[in-house]
Image (cartoon, rainbow over all chains, first blue to last red):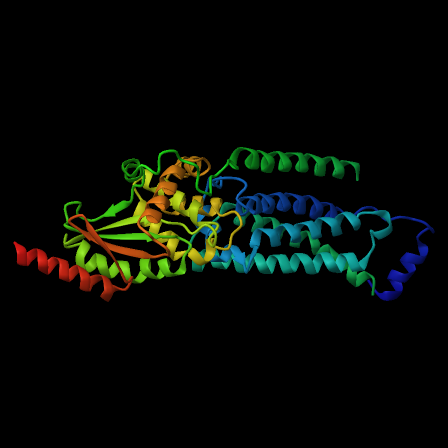
Length: 163
Length: 230
Protein backbone atom coordinates (compact mmCIF):
# COMPACT_ATOMS: atom_id res chain seq x y z
CA UNK A 1 0.00 0.00 0.00
CA UNK A 2 1.45 3.43 -0.91
CA UNK A 3 1.60 6.38 1.39
CA UNK A 4 -1.19 8.14 -0.52
CA UNK A 5 -3.44 5.11 -0.39
CA UNK A 6 -2.89 4.71 3.34
CA UNK A 7 -3.56 8.40 3.93
CA UNK A 8 -6.72 8.23 1.84
CA UNK A 9 -7.92 5.24 3.79
CA UNK A 10 -7.32 7.05 7.05
CA UNK A 11 -9.15 10.14 5.80
CA UNK A 12 -12.09 8.03 4.67
CA UNK A 13 -12.54 6.53 8.12
CA UNK A 14 -15.32 8.22 10.02
CA UNK A 15 -14.06 10.50 12.73
CA UNK A 16 -13.86 8.82 16.10
CA UNK A 17 -13.80 5.35 14.57
CA UNK A 18 -11.88 2.87 16.69
CA UNK A 19 -10.12 -0.03 15.09
CA UNK A 20 -10.83 -3.58 16.20
CA UNK A 21 -8.51 -5.15 18.78
CA UNK A 22 -5.84 -7.03 16.88
CA UNK A 23 -5.90 -10.80 17.16
CA UNK A 24 -2.12 -11.01 17.25
CA UNK A 25 -1.94 -8.80 20.34
CA UNK A 26 -4.55 -10.97 22.02
CA UNK A 27 -2.44 -14.01 21.22
CA UNK A 28 0.67 -12.27 22.59
CA UNK A 29 -1.13 -11.50 25.86
CA UNK A 30 -2.26 -15.10 26.35
CA UNK A 31 1.12 -16.57 25.42
CA UNK A 32 2.96 -14.09 27.65
CA UNK A 33 0.76 -14.94 30.61
CA UNK A 34 1.44 -18.66 30.15
CA UNK A 35 5.16 -17.96 29.82
CA UNK A 36 5.02 -15.82 32.96
CA UNK A 37 3.74 -18.70 35.07
CA UNK A 38 6.33 -21.12 33.65
CA UNK A 39 9.11 -18.66 34.53
CA UNK A 40 7.49 -17.92 37.88
CA UNK A 41 7.54 -21.59 38.87
CA UNK A 42 11.24 -21.83 38.03
CA UNK A 43 11.95 -18.62 39.94
CA UNK A 44 10.12 -19.97 42.98
CA UNK A 45 12.16 -23.17 42.72
CA UNK A 46 15.43 -21.24 42.44
CA UNK A 47 14.37 -19.28 45.52
CA UNK A 48 14.00 -22.51 47.48
CA UNK A 49 10.24 -22.27 47.81
CA UNK A 50 9.05 -25.34 45.98
CA UNK A 51 11.11 -28.33 47.03
CA UNK A 52 12.08 -30.85 44.33
CA UNK A 53 11.46 -29.60 40.81
CA UNK A 54 8.63 -31.52 39.15
CA UNK A 55 10.18 -32.78 35.95
CA UNK A 56 8.39 -35.34 33.85
CA UNK A 57 10.70 -35.15 30.85
CA UNK A 58 14.40 -34.33 30.77
CA UNK A 59 16.85 -33.48 33.53
CA UNK A 60 15.58 -30.26 35.04
CA UNK A 61 17.69 -30.53 38.19
CA UNK A 62 20.96 -30.61 36.23
CA UNK A 63 19.99 -27.55 34.22
CA UNK A 64 18.60 -25.59 37.20
CA UNK A 65 21.64 -26.33 39.37
CA UNK A 66 24.16 -25.45 36.66
CA UNK A 67 26.14 -22.22 36.63
CA UNK A 68 24.12 -21.14 33.59
CA UNK A 69 20.90 -20.93 35.60
CA UNK A 70 22.11 -17.56 36.86
CA UNK A 71 23.63 -14.44 35.36
CA UNK A 72 25.63 -13.14 38.26
CA UNK A 73 23.29 -13.04 41.24
CA UNK A 74 20.16 -12.98 39.05
CA UNK A 75 18.37 -16.23 38.23
CA UNK A 76 17.61 -16.58 34.51
CA UNK A 77 14.06 -17.41 35.55
CA UNK A 78 13.72 -13.92 37.07
CA UNK A 79 14.75 -12.42 33.73
CA UNK A 80 12.07 -14.56 32.13
CA UNK A 81 9.43 -13.35 34.58
CA UNK A 82 10.34 -9.73 33.88
CA UNK A 83 10.36 -10.27 30.13
CA UNK A 84 6.97 -11.96 30.03
CA UNK A 85 5.44 -9.31 32.31
CA UNK A 86 6.70 -6.60 29.95
CA UNK A 87 5.27 -8.34 26.88
CA UNK A 88 1.95 -8.97 28.64
CA UNK A 89 1.68 -5.33 29.74
CA UNK A 90 2.53 -4.04 26.28
CA UNK A 91 0.03 -6.36 24.62
CA UNK A 92 -2.77 -5.43 27.02
CA UNK A 93 -2.08 -1.70 26.62
CA UNK A 94 -1.90 -2.22 22.88
CA UNK A 95 -5.40 -3.70 22.92
CA UNK A 96 -6.96 -0.63 24.51
CA UNK A 97 -8.91 1.61 22.10
CA UNK A 98 -6.49 4.52 22.43
CA UNK A 99 -3.49 2.41 21.53
CA UNK A 100 -4.73 -0.18 19.08
CA UNK A 101 -2.91 1.50 16.22
CA UNK A 102 0.12 2.50 18.24
CA UNK A 103 3.27 1.94 16.24
CA UNK A 104 5.42 2.45 19.31
CA UNK A 105 3.76 -0.42 21.10
CA UNK A 106 4.00 -2.50 17.95
CA UNK A 107 7.71 -1.76 17.70
CA UNK A 108 8.29 -2.54 21.37
CA UNK A 109 6.43 -5.84 21.09
CA UNK A 110 8.43 -6.84 18.05
CA UNK A 111 11.74 -5.85 19.62
CA UNK A 112 10.91 -7.45 22.96
CA UNK A 113 9.86 -10.74 21.43
CA UNK A 114 12.91 -10.76 19.16
CA UNK A 115 15.14 -10.21 22.17
CA UNK A 116 13.35 -12.99 23.99
CA UNK A 117 13.77 -15.41 21.11
CA UNK A 118 17.44 -14.57 20.82
CA UNK A 119 18.05 -15.08 24.55
CA UNK A 120 16.02 -18.27 24.50
CA UNK A 121 18.01 -19.57 21.54
CA UNK A 122 21.22 -18.95 23.50
CA UNK A 123 19.84 -20.83 26.51
CA UNK A 124 18.74 -23.70 24.29
CA UNK A 125 22.22 -23.84 22.80
CA UNK A 126 23.66 -24.06 26.33
CA UNK A 127 21.33 -26.94 27.18
CA UNK A 128 22.19 -28.82 23.99
CA UNK A 129 25.92 -28.22 23.73
CA UNK A 130 27.30 -27.19 27.13
CA UNK A 131 25.12 -28.51 29.94
CA UNK A 132 24.01 -31.45 27.78
CA UNK A 133 20.73 -31.76 29.63
CA UNK A 134 17.22 -30.58 28.93
CA UNK A 135 14.80 -28.85 31.25
CA UNK A 136 11.19 -29.24 30.13
CA UNK A 137 10.29 -25.81 31.50
CA UNK A 138 13.10 -24.15 29.54
CA UNK A 139 11.99 -25.92 26.38
CA UNK A 140 8.38 -24.91 27.04
CA UNK A 141 9.43 -21.29 27.51
CA UNK A 142 11.44 -21.43 24.29
CA UNK A 143 8.38 -22.64 22.41
CA UNK A 144 6.19 -19.98 24.03
CA UNK A 145 8.53 -17.09 23.21
CA UNK A 146 8.93 -18.37 19.65
CA UNK A 147 5.16 -18.45 19.20
CA UNK A 148 4.99 -14.99 20.79
CA UNK A 149 7.54 -13.70 18.31
CA UNK A 150 5.55 -15.16 15.43
CA UNK A 151 2.48 -13.39 16.85
CA UNK A 152 4.34 -10.07 16.77
CA UNK A 153 5.17 -10.34 13.04
CA UNK A 154 1.92 -8.62 11.97
CA UNK A 155 3.26 -5.57 13.81
CA UNK A 156 5.71 -5.18 10.92
CA UNK A 157 2.82 -4.44 8.60
CA UNK A 158 1.40 -2.01 11.14
CA UNK A 159 4.78 -0.27 11.37
CA UNK A 160 5.09 -0.08 7.58
CA UNK A 161 1.50 1.16 7.16
CA UNK A 162 2.21 4.07 9.42
CA UNK A 163 5.04 5.42 7.23
CA UNK B 1 -12.15 -8.33 24.35
CA UNK B 2 -14.45 -9.87 26.93
CA UNK B 3 -13.56 -13.35 25.70
CA UNK B 4 -9.87 -12.46 25.95
CA UNK B 5 -10.25 -11.39 29.56
CA UNK B 6 -12.07 -14.63 30.35
CA UNK B 7 -9.25 -16.64 28.78
CA UNK B 8 -6.62 -14.60 30.65
CA UNK B 9 -8.49 -15.08 33.90
CA UNK B 10 -8.68 -18.84 33.33
CA UNK B 11 -4.94 -19.02 32.57
CA UNK B 12 -4.20 -16.91 35.64
CA UNK B 13 -6.28 -19.17 37.88
CA UNK B 14 -4.53 -22.29 36.62
CA UNK B 15 -1.13 -20.64 36.90
CA UNK B 16 -1.66 -19.27 40.39
CA UNK B 17 -3.06 -22.60 41.48
CA UNK B 18 -0.14 -24.61 40.09
CA UNK B 19 2.61 -22.34 41.41
CA UNK B 20 0.80 -21.83 44.70
CA UNK B 21 0.42 -25.57 45.21
CA UNK B 22 4.12 -26.12 44.50
CA UNK B 23 5.12 -23.49 47.03
CA UNK B 24 2.65 -24.68 49.65
CA UNK B 25 3.66 -28.33 49.39
CA UNK B 26 7.36 -27.94 48.87
CA UNK B 27 8.64 -25.35 51.32
CA UNK B 28 9.07 -27.17 54.59
CA UNK B 29 11.20 -26.00 57.47
CA UNK B 30 14.79 -27.00 56.83
CA UNK B 31 16.77 -26.63 60.04
CA UNK B 32 19.86 -24.63 59.20
CA UNK B 33 21.32 -23.90 62.64
CA UNK B 34 22.54 -25.97 65.59
CA UNK B 35 19.83 -27.15 67.93
CA UNK B 36 19.74 -27.55 71.68
CA UNK B 37 20.66 -31.10 72.74
CA UNK B 38 20.72 -32.32 76.30
CA UNK B 39 23.62 -34.31 77.64
CA UNK B 40 26.34 -33.13 75.31
CA UNK B 41 28.53 -32.39 78.30
CA UNK B 42 28.61 -36.15 78.86
CA UNK B 43 31.56 -37.28 76.77
CA UNK B 44 30.19 -40.76 76.20
CA UNK B 45 26.92 -39.38 74.86
CA UNK B 46 28.77 -36.81 72.80
CA UNK B 47 30.94 -39.42 71.10
CA UNK B 48 27.88 -41.58 70.51
CA UNK B 49 26.00 -38.73 68.83
CA UNK B 50 28.87 -37.11 66.97
CA UNK B 51 29.34 -39.61 64.20
CA UNK B 52 31.79 -38.92 61.43
CA UNK B 53 31.72 -40.51 58.01
CA UNK B 54 34.47 -43.02 57.31
CA UNK B 55 36.18 -43.81 54.07
CA UNK B 56 38.51 -46.78 53.77
CA UNK B 57 39.32 -49.87 55.77
CA UNK B 58 37.79 -49.60 59.23
CA UNK B 59 40.57 -51.77 60.59
CA UNK B 60 43.34 -49.43 59.41
CA UNK B 61 45.49 -48.47 62.39
CA UNK B 62 45.91 -44.84 61.34
CA UNK B 63 42.93 -42.50 61.12
CA UNK B 64 43.01 -39.19 59.28
CA UNK B 65 40.31 -37.00 60.81
CA UNK B 66 39.01 -33.83 59.24
CA UNK B 67 36.77 -31.26 60.85
CA UNK B 68 35.38 -29.41 57.86
CA UNK B 69 32.93 -26.75 56.77
CA UNK B 70 31.38 -27.17 53.32
CA UNK B 71 31.29 -23.41 52.79
CA UNK B 72 34.94 -22.87 53.74
CA UNK B 73 37.26 -22.21 50.78
CA UNK B 74 40.21 -23.81 52.56
CA UNK B 75 38.17 -26.95 53.08
CA UNK B 76 37.28 -26.91 49.40
CA UNK B 77 40.95 -26.80 48.49
CA UNK B 78 41.68 -29.62 50.93
CA UNK B 79 38.82 -31.75 49.62
CA UNK B 80 39.67 -31.31 45.97
CA UNK B 81 43.47 -31.26 46.11
CA UNK B 82 44.87 -32.84 49.28
CA UNK B 83 42.32 -35.49 50.15
CA UNK B 84 42.56 -37.26 46.78
CA UNK B 85 46.32 -37.55 47.29
CA UNK B 86 45.84 -38.97 50.77
CA UNK B 87 43.33 -41.47 49.45
CA UNK B 88 45.73 -42.57 46.76
CA UNK B 89 48.69 -42.83 49.12
CA UNK B 90 47.10 -44.29 52.24
CA UNK B 91 43.37 -44.98 52.16
CA UNK B 92 43.21 -47.14 49.04
CA UNK B 93 46.04 -49.31 50.28
CA UNK B 94 44.39 -49.75 53.66
CA UNK B 95 47.20 -48.06 55.57
CA UNK B 96 44.85 -45.37 56.86
CA UNK B 97 41.19 -44.53 56.95
CA UNK B 98 39.65 -41.11 56.53
CA UNK B 99 36.91 -39.75 58.78
CA UNK B 100 35.03 -36.52 58.12
CA UNK B 101 33.32 -34.58 60.90
CA UNK B 102 31.22 -31.49 60.30
CA UNK B 103 32.25 -28.27 61.98
CA UNK B 104 30.27 -25.56 60.16
CA UNK B 105 31.35 -22.04 61.11
CA UNK B 106 27.81 -20.71 60.98
CA UNK B 107 28.71 -17.15 61.98
CA UNK B 108 30.69 -16.71 58.77
CA UNK B 109 29.05 -19.35 56.57
CA UNK B 110 25.27 -19.24 56.93
CA UNK B 111 24.65 -22.11 54.48
CA UNK B 112 27.22 -24.47 55.98
CA UNK B 113 24.98 -26.15 58.57
CA UNK B 114 22.31 -26.93 55.99
CA UNK B 115 24.97 -28.16 53.57
CA UNK B 116 26.25 -30.52 56.27
CA UNK B 117 22.72 -31.81 56.86
CA UNK B 118 22.27 -32.23 53.11
CA UNK B 119 25.39 -34.38 52.95
CA UNK B 120 24.00 -36.61 55.72
CA UNK B 121 20.69 -36.87 53.88
CA UNK B 122 22.71 -38.12 50.91
CA UNK B 123 24.47 -40.58 53.24
CA UNK B 124 21.04 -42.03 54.07
CA UNK B 125 20.86 -43.11 50.43
CA UNK B 126 24.44 -44.37 50.32
CA UNK B 127 26.02 -41.52 48.37
CA UNK B 128 27.73 -39.45 51.02
CA UNK B 129 31.13 -39.07 49.39
CA UNK B 130 29.72 -38.30 45.96
CA UNK B 131 27.56 -35.58 47.52
CA UNK B 132 30.46 -34.37 49.69
CA UNK B 133 32.65 -33.89 46.61
CA UNK B 134 29.79 -32.33 44.65
CA UNK B 135 29.17 -29.75 47.38
CA UNK B 136 32.80 -28.73 47.44
CA UNK B 137 33.08 -28.62 43.66
CA UNK B 138 30.03 -26.37 43.40
CA UNK B 139 30.73 -24.30 46.51
CA UNK B 140 31.00 -21.03 44.59
CA UNK B 141 27.49 -21.50 43.21
CA UNK B 142 25.52 -22.36 46.33
CA UNK B 143 27.48 -20.41 48.94
CA UNK B 144 26.02 -16.98 48.03
CA UNK B 145 22.42 -18.20 47.83
CA UNK B 146 19.89 -16.94 50.33
CA UNK B 147 17.89 -20.16 50.15
CA UNK B 148 20.11 -23.01 48.91
CA UNK B 149 17.78 -25.86 49.87
CA UNK B 150 16.34 -26.40 46.40
CA UNK B 151 19.86 -26.34 44.94
CA UNK B 152 20.89 -29.08 47.37
CA UNK B 153 17.88 -31.10 46.22
CA UNK B 154 18.89 -30.53 42.61
CA UNK B 155 22.37 -31.87 43.39
CA UNK B 156 20.80 -34.95 44.93
CA UNK B 157 18.78 -35.56 41.80
CA UNK B 158 21.81 -35.20 39.55
CA UNK B 159 23.52 -37.90 41.61
CA UNK B 160 20.62 -40.26 41.13
CA UNK B 161 19.18 -39.97 44.62
CA UNK B 162 15.46 -40.12 45.34
CA UNK B 163 14.82 -36.39 45.43
CA UNK B 164 11.52 -36.78 47.25
CA UNK B 165 13.13 -38.62 50.16
CA UNK B 166 16.09 -36.29 50.09
CA UNK B 167 13.88 -33.20 50.17
CA UNK B 168 11.83 -34.64 53.03
CA UNK B 169 15.04 -35.24 54.96
CA UNK B 170 16.41 -31.79 54.22
CA UNK B 171 13.16 -29.91 54.90
CA UNK B 172 12.99 -31.23 58.44
CA UNK B 173 15.28 -31.40 61.45
CA UNK B 174 16.87 -34.72 60.50
CA UNK B 175 20.59 -34.89 61.27
CA UNK B 176 20.48 -31.50 63.01
CA UNK B 177 21.35 -33.20 66.28
CA UNK B 178 24.18 -35.12 64.65
CA UNK B 179 25.73 -32.02 63.11
CA UNK B 180 25.32 -30.10 66.36
CA UNK B 181 27.06 -32.92 68.21
CA UNK B 182 29.85 -32.92 65.61
CA UNK B 183 30.37 -29.22 66.29
CA UNK B 184 30.49 -29.79 70.05
CA UNK B 185 32.98 -32.62 69.61
CA UNK B 186 35.19 -30.28 67.63
CA UNK B 187 34.87 -27.68 70.37
CA UNK B 188 35.94 -30.26 72.96
CA UNK B 189 38.95 -31.15 70.81
CA UNK B 190 39.91 -27.45 70.62
CA UNK B 191 39.11 -27.15 66.93
CA UNK B 192 39.29 -23.45 66.13
CA UNK B 193 39.09 -23.31 62.35
CA UNK B 194 38.64 -25.37 59.25
CA UNK B 195 39.96 -27.54 57.90
CA UNK B 196 41.44 -29.01 61.04
CA UNK B 197 43.24 -32.27 60.43
CA UNK B 198 44.10 -34.75 63.13
CA UNK B 199 45.99 -37.99 62.70
CA UNK B 200 45.13 -40.65 65.25
CA UNK B 201 46.62 -43.97 66.10
CA UNK B 202 46.16 -46.12 69.15
CA UNK B 203 43.97 -43.56 70.90
CA UNK B 204 46.49 -40.76 70.55
CA UNK B 205 45.72 -37.91 68.13
CA UNK B 206 47.70 -34.92 66.95
CA UNK B 207 46.63 -31.88 64.94
CA UNK B 208 48.77 -31.65 61.83
CA UNK B 209 49.09 -29.09 59.02
CA UNK B 210 46.42 -29.56 56.36
CA UNK B 211 48.92 -30.08 53.57
CA UNK B 212 49.75 -33.42 52.02
CA UNK B 213 53.37 -33.16 53.14
CA UNK B 214 52.38 -32.20 56.66
CA UNK B 215 49.95 -35.09 57.00
CA UNK B 216 51.98 -37.74 55.21
CA UNK B 217 55.19 -37.06 57.11
CA UNK B 218 53.44 -37.73 60.42
CA UNK B 219 51.65 -40.78 59.04
CA UNK B 220 54.93 -42.19 57.77
CA UNK B 221 56.43 -41.65 61.21
CA UNK B 222 53.56 -43.51 62.85
CA UNK B 223 53.67 -46.33 60.33
CA UNK B 224 57.43 -46.63 60.74
CA UNK B 225 57.08 -46.76 64.51
CA UNK B 226 54.41 -49.36 64.15
CA UNK B 227 56.53 -51.47 61.81
CA UNK B 228 59.58 -51.04 64.02
CA UNK B 229 57.68 -52.19 67.05
CA UNK B 230 56.24 -55.24 65.30
